[in-house]
Image 1 (cartoon, rainbow, N blue to C red):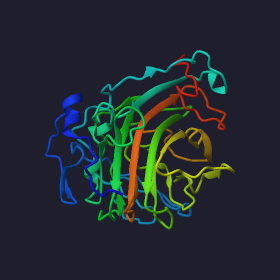
Image 2 (cartoon, rainbow, N blue to C red):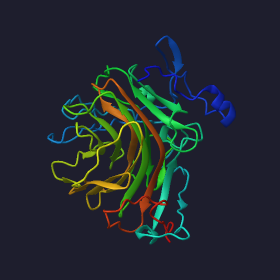
Image 3 (cartoon, one colour):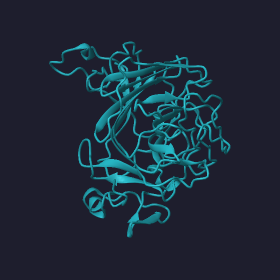
Image 4 (cartoon, one colour):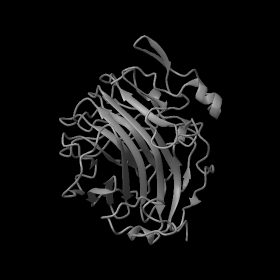
Length: 366
């Protein structure tokens, strides 16, 4: 794998598409392979860290809002609240009604479901304005990881998000960290992290669909993991996250942190995660009934039941290359993400709710 970080969007992209908002401080830089390369925007401080992926045999409570070095769960919680953040009631990008059934539609997905599209990201803006904090968390890591916008391997359009790990982490918490996140106040996406308040209330659950391209010089397992998606019910990280990622040599994506109270059931034909190609992941989460379901390229992978959290809201979420510190050779591309809030129950888990695509949407309140 190319260890140089010269894959980032060039300055000519900003001339064509408009420059991002100026950072409040000089962006960090790093020299790799003799080439001096600016890294991602450094305008934000990290939110309180979530608890990382871990082997399913681990149990116990996750990290709260105070630092922890519990290596068995691979995570810490940094005290990085943002006192300068706008009030949680600040409006941000109100959701639009989703499309209705497509003309000539044939199949089970033609009967529309009521849902609201809360957020999308295709990276074609050439900035991180749609993310809480206005960045992708690259400064949170060390010199062994980096991420930025890239013209390489876009799924749709011309731009994708690329992250890379090239050596073992020197971070005190023993993880590679650098990812894009969202914090919600009700149905409002916040512009900056506050690490307080109440997240999105979703009695019928949420659905996120995102496209991922993964390259790795080895299989995962024996404590080596990578997390692709994390969701936390509380804004201050006082309750446990739920995550989706890879932590075993069979390359099957699995949920984590549903134990000890919950149970995971793999589909009999659960597919392995392909490398070096685009993969569509769809994740359903409903903390009201304690359920989670994962689909990969339209195929059911697993169902989790019995998740118990005191809060049923959904506050802080993140995608990206979050991994154990012993990773040394991983590349991740991301593109075309969406978040939908269901307004009626999803009951047929044999079908992927790829909303607005293979599953028709009636529209918010329709």
